[in-house]
Image (spheres, rainbow, N blue to C red):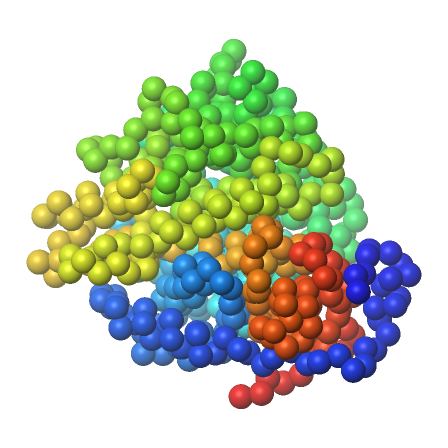
Length: 536
């Protein structure tokens, strides 16, 4: 039985369902413990954290959705990324914050905070059951000493994205005045009279880039996303005149990005240097996909995505390159700065690109044919494969670090820093690895919203659109906190894996909402009753 998005079907779906089997209860508990214990056993716990390895399994059991699929690597790295995220939940005198590096780094601010990847922290952490971590983290940035403009940071968008999952308006509306002030401060400091926002590439977290500084697709897309989020938050607060103001700001930024940052010949968004009569820098860089992260471009710009799967563009064996490989300045250097954005793969930008790609594949606008869900799956799979390190003893373990060689899988900054005997990384002198367990990207959110396809919405509707090519016999995502309910999503080709029938099925609070025999977009209204207590 398949339900479509019509008033009639929504009315039918609201009728209580009887005689439908209950879903299996948290089948993933054993797998979660197995993975978490294995990660801890293989870990050199170099930095003491608030939730240490000894408590990792319990924390994960209490807080994260369970994921199961036939691809062991995807499943393992999903749990690994939750295991590493947990390390970065730092209890401070100003409440919990989420860190980027575990050891203290000199360019960080209060409590070792860095705003560069904070948007990723909110997108990933919104699926954690305990709301305290991100409640505190939001207040830290705007009331407790954080520096939200030290680096580019899509704060309002990230907090709106969190609201779409937890449905709690009070924490969001509480800091609406600060989010408005933050937008105004960006306009004052980084917006030129031509209407475009500028940024130094290093302050985008993208130092040594080929395109360099100027009017970048990054900062302008972020500010478009901020304006759209502030429009929606203002509507939620009942401030219609403010919503109109931000809608107009967003429309202006969109027009400028599409008209000034788009290279019609190269069919790509590029950097425009500041100044009079400047020209777009002649290089395609991975951050040119950022506009789709915020649903900015019109359909006619979608052909840019051909570059994603082009081996002369961004596709490489161990990850997406940060600059197109055909460019003469493309480099994979082991000299100079250890963190270069002129070729190496960066999880940060890979996560942005995969989120943007999922948005493109879920658009209800004019369909495009340049990338498919098979391309999404293969790119995500490559991203998962890159999450490994061969230790000195020859054992290969799950790993996340800073930048990596997209042709070999070597973690470049780690290799570089190991040679700096008086530098950051010197194990023989008691030093700690700077980039170990680096929290500068998302992965679990890509599994949840992209691969499994739970698309967060502001209304009382559940929407699921898996980006899984035909071939898997099963997958499941359980214990998902969503707008006051606990969701579970199952796909079972034969009906033998979970014992609840064939096809794609969505449950809320142990009650089936909707199913389809095929892997396709399905929707259903959320029940009015809240979740049942979890059985220990």
